[in-house]
Length: 133
Image 1 (tube, rainbow, N blue to C red):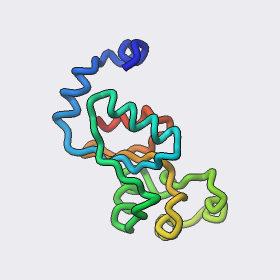
Image 2: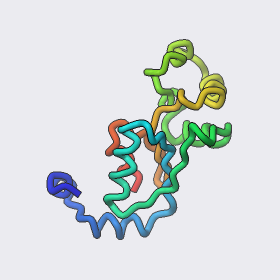
Image 3: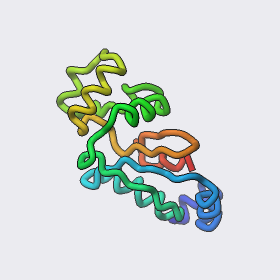
Image 4: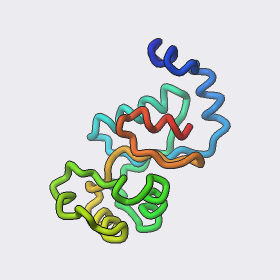
């Protein structure tokens, strides 16, 4: 962990590790080609957290998972990767329509998405994943 990070939070590596040990599993829905997703994974590992990594572009999505993540993130719109060309066509769509589109085209989901017993966070910026430790 960088000295600036340690100073800004007051948390040491061992303190993060103890905190992480007390938590249930963290799942990181990850795209290894995305630098922000790789940064989020690195931040977790620096704190002694080894998340269960799901490469969703390989595995795809199921409705139940997307619905759960959307509830935790504040709606399916929060999961939508607005930069993708197909996202413009979904402006104003219902959560059900967004989830159906995300199932059909997994790249439409923003990355990374982290989930633990403390909630769901879209890792933009990547430090947001630390909020659910």
